[in-house]
Length: 316
Image (cartoon, rainbow, N blue to C red; front, side, top):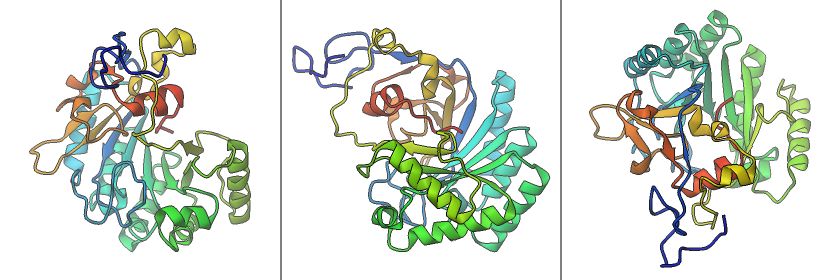
């Protein structure tokens, strides 16, 4: 796992089968399909400085998913015998999609838990969306969770990433969720030069001040993501790394999840390996869940830094 280029100057992450040093690249089989993600579209009400998916008010590279398309993949999951626990919706901002309530309802009716990633700002706070969320929370108690993107526990750092006033607008949405009793968690980032303990202490103080029923110490309830910078030099993951790192391939996100996206101009959605690589054609697995059951070769810096070495997961 030495961090060097190959003897013939080969570039890292350029060959799906071999690393730059000529070693066998690690791959991960789908062994426990636990979460099926849907990207609801890349349109967002804001534009963050370092959004890995480049969501914005104008980016429609991934277009809106529909309820009918979600229902089709839920049926495929049942027919394939996938033991799914959770359906996740991400974006963009999912509440920009006009069918988000319908897609969520379909997933809940199918018996799954639902996780929606949101900034909890104006799109979520429209009357129709609030009424829809309250209705679903009432009909399916305990099975709907919203994960709010709160990059830092302070307005200063959060607003530097997402725009002046965005911290307070997200808190307004979180206060509404609190008052309605709708479960929420938080996704933050670890790029502010503070230790994890310091970050969690800051979130804990915020939650206590606001009366948010969120556990700051639980990594599944307050998720702290590392910086996703593809230019940072990271080691490639070989088959030998599992033993060196004392890590199982089953612990990596692509062993338990897939994501469905719909590209602009495409007639049908397609399935990709995970939420982190929606644009990478090498990680496109096919149009059906059956095709998407094949192993994923860890041929991207995110695979190494974020998943294998960072141990992160987008699921609840």
